[in-house]
Amino acid sequence: MTLTKKLMLPAAALALAALVSTEAAAATSMAPDAFDALYATIAGWCKGTLGKSISLAFLLIGLSLGIIRGSIVAAVTCIAASLSLMIAPTILEAIFTVSGT
Image (cartoon, rainbow, N blue to C red; front, side, top):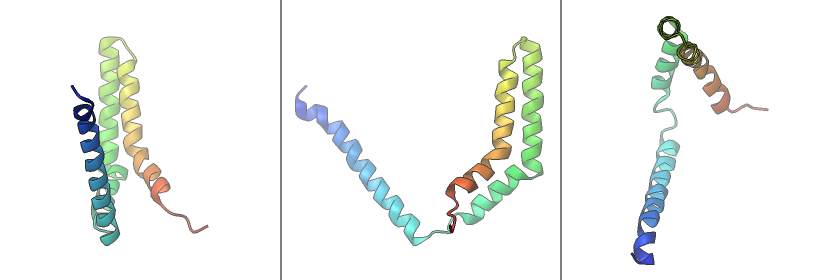
């Protein structure tokens, strides 16, 4: 394989990444609030009754799998998933919200 053929795939990947990033930047600058309603809906679901129900289901399934298998790994994984579901919207809002000070 020649050096040109070896460099062709990375060069194509770099060109594609540059094209995608410029398209994404153009799309975000033209419509900054296009997905605000979607984000609000999903965040509301996570923070509301649906999120609490799914978190409780994760907890119960994790505890039952931990008891059945005799291992705490399944319980810890499901508890982490339920906590992530409840805390993730708050963390994302804190990261992506620009403060005025």
